[in-house]
Amino acid sequence: MKYVSFDIDGVLVNSEDRLSMCIKPSNEVDWDCFLDCRKLFMDKPKQRIIEFLRLLRNRGFGIVIVTGRREYMRECTMNQLRGFGVIGFDGLFMRPDDNIEPDSMYKSWMIRNLLRRYDILVHFDDNASTVATLVSNGIDAVVLS
Image (cartoon, rainbow, N blue to C red; front, side):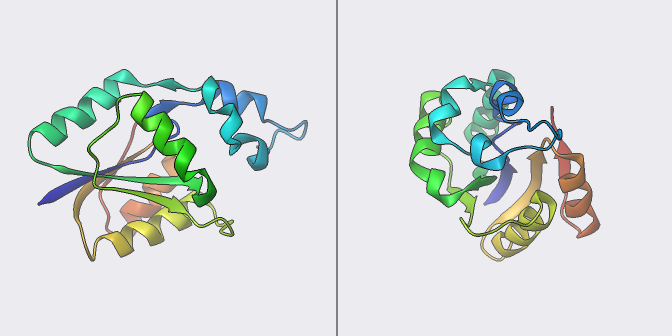
């Protein structure tokens, strides 16, 4: 089976409201704030991308989700995805709680490992740096916004 990989924040979910609430005066992201399950209610589904995911799944592709969200957010993330109609995926791969690598490094490592089990054709992400790192490592990736 061929697989397609999706990021969550910025791809399946519009998390701009949550992100804007978590910007420090120094213009850096307060990651503890952003990764707070109690703030997920601020997010909105990106219906166009969710419909694209469903179309791919209905055409026989497997779906995996690779996110920079930390493992402690698994339950609230699953609830959010279900609530937005993102169901039927083959795996949700989350950042270990103690991992502080940049998304580009973490996702490149994760997807390289997933390629041992899944024939991933492409990864969709909102971070151009992550996509550039994946592509430089021979992994097809596309920036979605």
